[in-house]
Image (cartoon, rainbow over all chains, first blue to last red; front, side, top):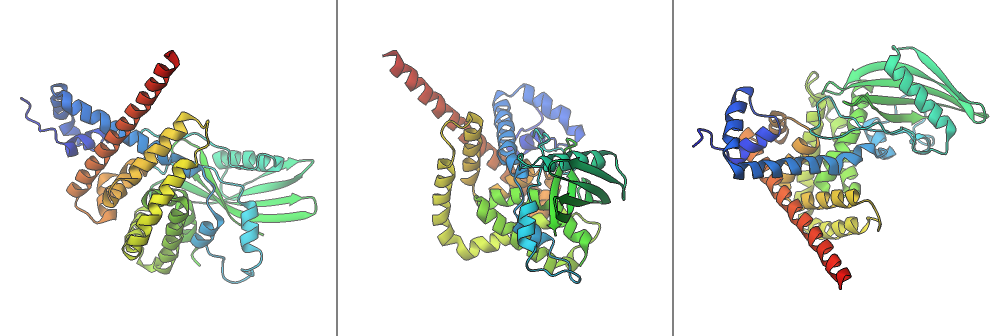
Length: 207
Length: 180
């Protein structure tokens, strides 16, 4: 018989990679002799993958404007809060992408890049997204990149500070300046890097 | 206003929404929970220790608000839950991919788990939080976290196997009928 008792708590830690390295060999050896424990391992894996996949799509949903406003209340001082805030925000919220993987590996979870622009009918949004992607990959703080669609308008993205959320996933602040016909709008945003190199983009405010 | 803190909060929103969705079992209730958590976090910002993990702090606030909320509304919400779960299953369009149907069933099965098992499962298996961090967030001994997690995962695994068995059974029945 094995010298390791394969209880469920031990097995879940094994499946999740939470076992100390020095115990791994003993547990694997014991598993080889225990078909019932293998079945338990299979179920523990199945459920981990299922749970991660079942909730993964939430990261791809646009974050409701009311939550962004709750997390980042309007700055005090120079600008009126009421009036422009909720509607302007809603309008610019086309932008959300995904995949904040957040610094650690999410076990077994596939994370692909999803385009930030939800309004595929807006050709300038696509240009903005491409410019943002480029400057996020290569740019330094203060650098800017212009984008344009002659029929719709043009704009530029300026890269701001970089900061961490506590898990090591770097996020960048950025500023967008856009003109469509006679309409000129500026917005601030945040983009966070996911484990798979995709970016999650949120527009904070627009006016 | 400390922009840095707010920006970090914003950056965490997608993950907080996902965690809260699992606890509250409906998108609207989950988002209400996240909104309340953001408000509480900003009100108590001076209690956050710089240099510690903001995500852990936020998960704890979400979890604590959820528990408070449950205590206050436990009876009325039990009734709502059943209705909303049914609605969510019904919301899947006919002809939607099998995968979407399966994942909806997974969410439903997770929704049936006991409350405290669900919190551990969401943190560790969905949010990817390490065991020791989950223990800190939930203010539980590590052993309790592990036993709740293993029970939640086994229960979920068995429930999903059972559902898969039912699907095969239905498919088999169809074939028999066609043969006749």
